[in-house]
Image (tube, rainbow, N blue to C red; front, side):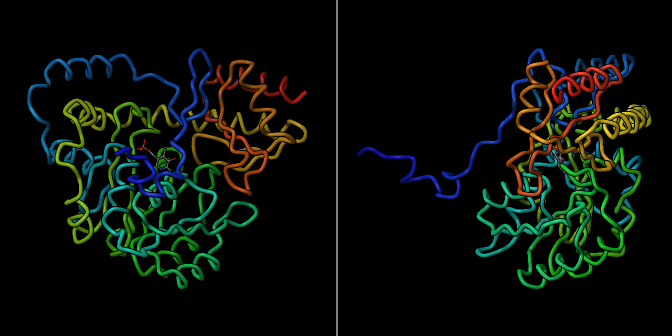
Length: 356
Ligand SMILES: *Cc1c(COP(=O)(O)O)cnc(C)c1O
């Protein structure tokens, strides 16, 4: 009997496009919000020593106890909040969605935002509802509350600051959403290091709130470590879906000691914020270009012809992100990750040439 994939694979999976990662070999890579700086030499030596000592014949600690202690100590997780680890925060989004994906359950998020919210809702068989941001990419609290009342979402995801717009949503608007939501609200603080504002301190006051962070944008994208903090009543349930060894031994050992030195990573983040200000100033001076103020390590901007400028940049050896076609509000928009000062200069030169 000949079996076709379409006989077996769920239709919503058949209609998905695989997450596309562009080939960046030989390019100045400003497409994925990575920290452009390598780890300082002494921390690399520390990581190498830890790799040497780690018994790779043994399974990792399923509780990641030492890592948990380091996160509690250095990431201002309130007393009483529990911590759940993911292989990147992408995995945590998936765990949360899997936990609440009853038939007909809804995942709601503002749009445009992080593409994985919609993708993961689809994987898990959830209904996805996107609520448009205002024209200036601020959160629209009236519309959010209206849609929350209409769809009663099991979970609302809000990236704070938002990707790909860089916007840090208004606190009062955020609180209206938290208070209106009948289910979970996950504040995704992937860009916390560049923003200087957090919902972590709100956890004790809001039982339906979860705050998610990742080490990826802080310079450790290759380690794959994210965590979410919130009430044990929720995270104790979601924890049951976590595969026991999702955080490997090397990641546990190295992340623990690097978090003990998080000040060093935050110094790099501060340098990136300074470079962001300089880059934004240079972009504002370019004709026919609109930029949005960013609180993250990237800048969203609009040019007269986004796809053309993107291709011209690529031909000049600079890879950024083309968002044209990703969402109607992102027509002709491009997103550049803040690089080193040298990379930013090279990008700006290539951009001027590409726009000419
Ligand atoms: C990059 C990003 C993540 C995913 O980070 P990982 O921890 O690397 O999986 C999550 N949320 C937002 C908004 C992001 O931009």
